[in-house]
Length: 390
Image (cartoon, rainbow, N blue to C red; front, side, top):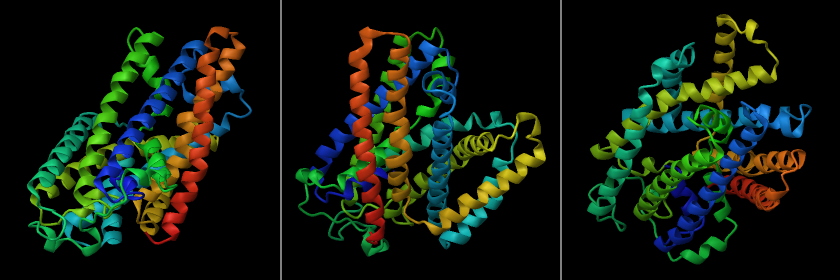
């Protein structure tokens, strides 16, 4: 729902989606390749976690590097969730953003994050999938029925702020050559980010051969690529250059169809939040070297309150979720997606003298170099975009 803004960062004509679509597919394939590499490393080393895979291949002395990266990545995910929830609930309730965020955090997110057993939230994961499917359908209906037609002819246009109304120009497919297109690339690193869970997926796969794991990765990322591309296309085709960091903000508050979509997204995020938050909290306690036996209910509650307070403060300070996704994707996302898998794969192939896989190592290293270059430029562009007041 933030990716349409990534396309709008470099183009304002509908033809700009042509290269954007190619980027969505290409980055998705590269992300799938990195995900598959992590599974392969786990198969070769017997590692059961990302940190174990790193330790087995790169050594224990540097294991703090992926530990910090994964922890900060989940922190950015929680921050993005808080920002989206602030925008969504303030739009639904017609209230100001920051007080709404404080209310949602205190009354909804805090009790959920204080839960010691998250198994009760498992059934709500299906609601998240259904919510995104409904959102895609609702956005498609509004594009096709012309409710937000450019030029003010749509029936909801009078209720949409001028800076959120559809805006199209002549910056089409060729505009992808602009460095601004790297903002989309880095946002995509976040969109496909699940790599810190790759070891868990590999271990829990029935009959977990490398071939079967690669098949699952192919189908899983294939579906994700399709849905990501479809929602990005619909959002950009509707609002063009005016796409907000959260495209749902472009739709009128009185639009019942899209209000239901906001509710669906809010429910999805609310019940996904504790899962990401728990990963972030546990990561910080691991880094602080707090042993499991000392993680009492009281300690967990104190850490939860402190960490949720920091996240909420950041969400109040920052208002553009696309910046959070682009900057987080450019730095942490690119490292987890392209760089770390390549380094671990290269190391294990060398350790186990798997000379027949040298071509795969070369491909993975090329992907890592590409990720580093994209990350440096993308992070700079994200910062400049914010500094420019866009």
